[in-house]
Image (cartoon, rainbow, N blue to C red; front, side, top):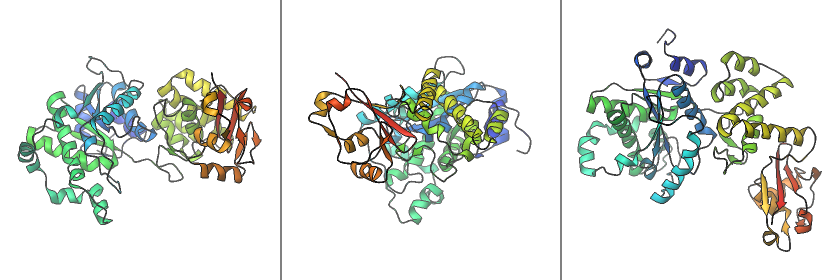
Length: 417
């Protein structure tokens, strides 16, 4: 499509950097102009929360609804039992039904912050593909659906080919994943009139399979749109920090920690992230992203506040900014720092400072904590911490203590009744 799209949704996708590829941009544009387009993104329930790496897809669903269309958030209760092999070097661990449902319950909490659910034409719906996948009869499925798939073509998709080229095992179970995802698209089209599947660019092959299957079985035209797989300017996968995944659920990643992740964005990423993860006008995102020197730090605070407000609310964003200013500018403690609460029985005769650093999430292991101390990267109440053998007893916690790892990561430890 050489001309600018006429639909608001595609215009937003292109202007803000969400779009990597589209199967038929002109036809999708026409459908979006004609009326309400139901569109879905699938999320497998492999953990109790999604992380920042999924936020680009969630924002796509939010913009879809804001521009007058209907988001479908599809929980992969069925496909999680199989595991998506896309660009993985190994097979995902298999989860039982109870673990999958617990993960779905955790994930559902996030979506309500970004899209509105209900019964109106553009209200979002949340579905679970276990509803139709678990009832499939194997022989009938092979006969009615399997015959539409060429093994030669499936082997040529990059997500499969890359595993085979590296001579890494690809189980028959995983190989079936793309057929099940294709079936999802067809079933959503049949049941809900879904016209569009979106996902990361690693899902391109799976999406194309779903389009082909829907055409062959239902003779319906449907479309696919993918977003780029994001890396930060230093080459790290989006959503990962030095401490692991940055989760979206508050009970797995405190709002202050979430805010701080965005405040620590590299200068080169600020403009791009403002477009993708906030709703500020594109011109303003470009202006803020072009700032240099100390001024770019103000743009990072705006980024952190905007993203945190969308997920956790304005009060949480303001509390995080206030805490950051107290910690960094005034050397204070800050009310919103991640806090480890210990009872007297937890402490007993004393707990080692190394254990506390690990429990606070400032180091992954005791070995890492000791290395942090040895390299002068740890502080206790803003004073250098040099003794890895230090024991903390209940008297030392008569008032909260502050632990720091480097200049940007902090936590409180306090005694509770």
